[in-house]
Length: 143
Image 1 (cartoon, one colour):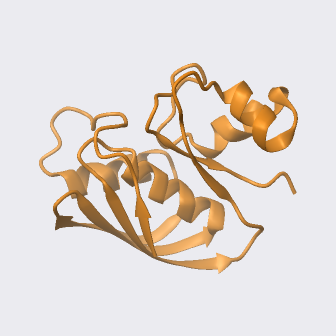
Image 2: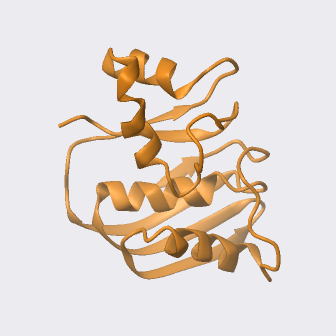
């Protein structure tokens, strides 16, 4: 499955990373995302391919979001098998003026459920107050 991202949005990789694929793999593994046999390949022209087996859809989506919200990446091709298939998740592109509380209110009807969105996007969010237009966030179901 192919996911589109804003190519110039996201948090840069840590200093000292030798190539973008290794940097993305390091980011995904560094946040303890549960994707076994993780492989990240740079496919050229702002596209990466992420492969492996995720424990569940949420873990697969965390890996996809971590890869896609890297500056210079516009597309993520996900070739991730999922062991346990939970409910559907929505992907949302942050707009100017958005906050996690506003997004939470729009999707869940309750602005105080923003920690759910924050936790679902930890591979790339380190602070709930630091989201940027163009970032793509996972909005998991509340089930």
